[in-house]
Image: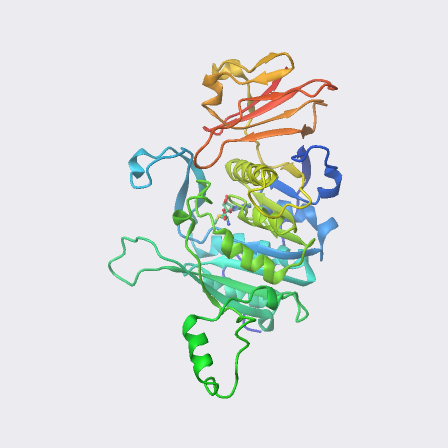
Length: 427
Ligand SMILES: C[S@@+](CC[C@H](N)C(=O)[O-])C[C@H]1O[C@@H](n2cnc3c(N)ncnc32)[C@H](O)[C@@H]1O
């Protein structure tokens, strides 16, 4: 068989990986979180995370979307300010996002190969993988996937096209990514009728005026057509309402097409390079369960805020879906250092005030907080979050107070500041 080789290629998968629950979120009052414990946001290197999931999930995940670093040899910053002028990058408030820097292609492939192998193991027999890359490494990854999944299981090489500015003057403007879609077997989920799109106006006019167009085949104009393997969706930079500030965030419309096509309601969808949590957000809106992991605390924090904000929007009746609600389980992994919890004294910030059973954050604190939550019965180990507040991405304020439930034990509050610092405070 033809395959790709490089000097450090190894077929053995580095072992190790243990997950530990850090927090469980109950975003819906009275909701039994145990129904939704499949839904997880995990902080950790996905090699260890996937190894740790294998005993329980081997052959069980219905769909995996993977959007790894692309081998661009760049670092990406997160935009953490709110309401800044997009045309004035010099004024943006930035923080560390993630790194995509490698000594050479071999070291990049050393990262990718064992992870793709683990994804193949985790997929159910009717499951699919969508691997999102661009010109930098796509052709190398395709050879790896041919080896792991089998050449015959390549279903599509999807081209995602978009517009955007570029300084390039020595070649054509590079404005497409490739998404390699492989299934684990030839019996795979593909909901063709759910992804149909309308025919173009020209096609409709042509077929309405001449029945002979199309060499005797008349399309079902009402039913719509199966999308081509090239897709246009605007990039998130242009979609202000979706933008979280986390770098290289993908559009929800792109994820929606993939999830609708290759999974069913109740299925388990995983994204082990989660970033801003786009897959988790869209999967839960479409009533799928999700597992989502990333090495970067800011990615996990962004995904958590995004899910919380989505649910709260839904409660107000503003967005569809989330029929069953869900809980989020955050797990920490042995080898990953969670940013330490600091105290108000260390940060020289005034702590929250409590009066008449209400916790209120003073103005100085609220101006610095991106997210906060409460466990009204803190056991000192797992944070059972019964109240969450997240700062909206564009406009609007983060809630500054909450009522303490009547029956409670020790009350613990956790905060994430815009700077990324975390505070844990027991009242
Ligand atoms: C291209 S971004 C993903 C963007 C995401 N699709 C979205 O819509 O926001 C790649 C992500 O992979 C994460 N990552 C890189 N190496 C990883 C690893 N070994 N384990 C887990 N996550 C990793 C990075 O921290 C980064 O957030």
